[in-house]
Image 1 (tube, one colour):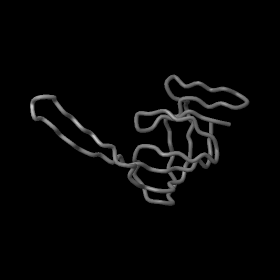
Image 2: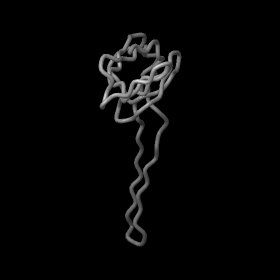
Image 3: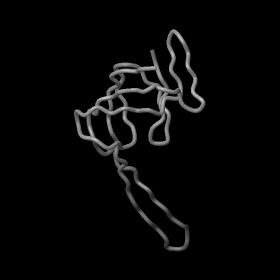
Image 4: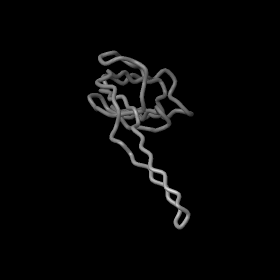
Amino acid sequence: MYAIIRTGGKQYQVAQGDQLRVEKLAGNVGETVELNEVLLVGGEKLSIGKPVVEGAKVTATILAQGKAKKVMIFKKKRRKGYQVKNGHRQQYTALRIDGISA
């Protein structure tokens, strides 16, 4: 059984036991999180949501809260003496999918 979920403005295909990184979610390491925006549940019977599947949810355990690698932003306009160097580290939450219920 698999599901397509939406969190943090992105969509992910997940199955039980999968580990993935998503945009930061509230919670501490070891806590259980319910993801209710389930767009599709597949397996023996396919359920497609309009836009979400009613009553479906995905439960996951938070494995880690952290920051990704630094992304460098560099802007320059030639012949104008304009240069800006910046960096950004996106926060993430690492999840382990425990179960999918439709």
